[in-house]
Length: 161
Image 1 (tube, rainbow, N blue to C red):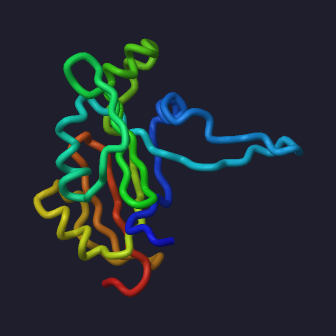
Image 2 (cartoon, rainbow, N blue to C red):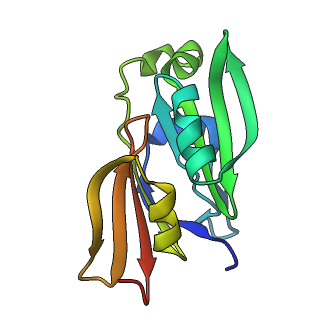
């Protein structure tokens, strides 16, 4: 895989994932659910404060944006093969009022990277929740909180220390 970042596992507000990305499954002839892709949707109060983190620090590019009033209500961000979507509470609540009480900043993202040194340099000044560490399962990781309150673990498997 030629990408620099690849999403390995995560937890995101499930209803928001299906609301934006649509059903991520198709039925095979034998009716087994086949999964094609999972894109996390970070549920936040405001998108604008997150953009310097995702675009500026990490090099993600906006692939789509949807305004909501005089602010952004939704953006899609992509770098290589990794996609992250961000949607505001106001945008979600306008369409689905029953979701107004959904907690903000509850997603945990785990992103595998090729070069933890480069990612760590890009994160200088970010809120570090756990400094660089070597895990028992063979990865070198750094864990940060992005400006929307979500936790992102960047992990390199292999030769890094």
